[in-house]
Image (cartoon, rainbow, N blue to C red; front, side, top):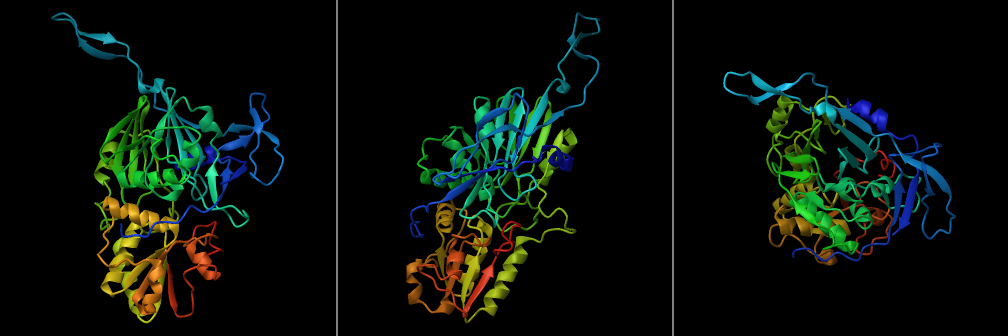
Length: 445
């Protein structure tokens, strides 16, 4: 069923927009970035009712604006099967049959789902749900630029359709704190002020981003926990615990008058996770028994047979690599938000008597937030400032850095091109890239 949604909702046009835009050392000032806005979820139209507006452009380039007609791609509309007849409710006088009353069934309602990003691409996840004139957004992520997007650091969705319906939108619901699910949130919230709902760690990462954009304190952040429900218009949103590479990840069940929609978010069935409990499969089973109108499931690696190995296996791999590199300095590149993986690196460094330094602004920020909220355990004396690397021999150091996707301005890329102010990479270094390269960045990696 999900494949059918992909076919129906995937836009043919992919136009874009760009704008310029504790135990841990303080992060440096945010780097100047160019942001590329993608029109995923939009298509050209020659129909008279199509809205004509200036197309997006690279700000500061001097390029002239040009007009194009844009309308959102046709949303998927779902309805429950119609029920026939009447329902008997209550009783009349003594001896009479139950009174008949016509009722409104689920078939009288529909749910519209508009995909504004995240389909047939890696990243930029954002979906708009609508029922009975009430709307909410699920996630608001960014994507990494392709190799041909020269000078672009971030790719964000086009919010035109969202802005057009801002009075109907009740809020933004977040499934977890990865960049491809929260990275575009500041760019949306400075256009439209909406309440945001998420788990503690997710909102901690969001608030850090809002501070960079001078939005902290201006947006209402609402903390939720697995098992909790919130009401957004006529829809009730239930949060369900799942496993992922970042703690505090959730799936959602959207209870609507038309029926229940289950959205898994990013998930992994791991019976022995490194942090938190196992995915709440029992709740998914209960929802299945009561009836689900639509299941929207993550499809990453769905073509591969078998199953994904447990994170405990990754911990064993780190142990083997650390033993192999006993005479070298170890540099590990991973996602700054992959806190489970970073915890494994810290544990291994502690085991082999190494000090750990962090490189990359997002890495330093995320570690500070996770440590403050108690989502990562850092032994006393393990972390050192990157400026103190020269005081230790190479075999005493582990450097954890960003850049696992070959991002141009990441710490690892700058090390590779001898452009990093504090770290020089040489043949005696042992470099581990602890992440699978995304399709858009595999050549760069």
